[in-house]
Length: 469
Image (tube, rainbow, N blue to C red; front, side):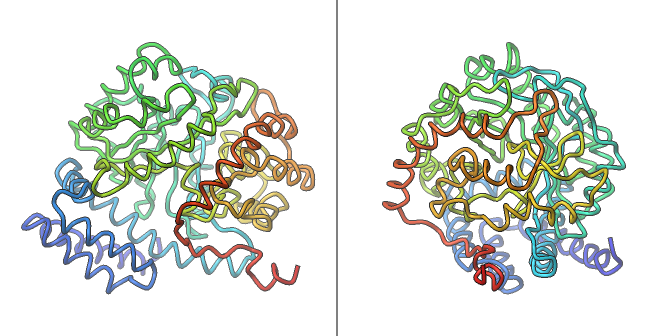
């Protein structure tokens, strides 16, 4: 961290302490004052409607977002809140400027977020999960993870997510990395089996680490895919985290079998009661040799989910929990965010992949820098071809537009990176072709009949170079 950033952080830290004390005096009134002040300070960086929405929420004590804010203040350790606010606030503010400048400078995608796998090892074998086959195949060293974060910060990325495998098998190295980079926010997707009192204490000491606990509805729907006893272990971990006032949420893989359960009031209300503050949801993807295509939700199920999400996030009808769906929220981010447009993934063997679900690469951290990878043919192809569909309810280059990924991999010469059974791109894309064909008319009807946000995304095709092509 540069001297100017340390000074900025010290001043912001003192200001954050004052802000939290100020909020405590009169949460509803003072939160509103803070939103007004924040808009005056950084209003040009973010759309005005964001601030209008925040104001509307905190002005109404019955609004679920007002409840969400009060829950955060009462349930999460103040040191954690402060460190997360600093990491996310300063990181977003400084990182956004750096990302935009570096995109222009280097003529390539530059991400805000980087996902990395500390290890391929996992102590569960969830049905349909490719990582269940890997075993203790490979791991990133601490120095390699440190290099990834340092390089990423240099490009403007200040948010890092640990996937796997089970990342908490490397919990000591993760905590060390978090402490070494207080200007970044970290999140670990975890099956929750390795969470104990000692880890909760150390997690709060670091302050900039949150967890997304994997859970898939009721005990029955969860354990049918994740193994007997998994549900009870996850609930036990939630209660430990809540006791220690840690910041945590859930990771939900929705399938054709569990969709109605994981989006139902009973499940979501129980998660709020357990202290869950966010839900990161994703469509089951039929990737890898153990893929179970029958677990992919049918188009009609996905249509209902799209509508249900709008209810769940509404200030009057929703839940006091931040819910994001990576597949069905493409309209908010301009379609596919992979290939470094907003994020990319590094597996436990060091392969730099466009997406956690796209197991193809032409670069590796042991031979290439992150910037090298972003400027190599595979990531350049993502940059040049995004969005893969102007209907952002069909964002993915293999799941909804399988011809796109097939073309990119074949033209760039990217290699399959599955650690056990490398999968030809034709196999993956052909497996998705039937679903893509069935989803297309449903997605097109939804797209044409509903109003969508304008994320104001500039694609390569909008640049002078893109227009010249």
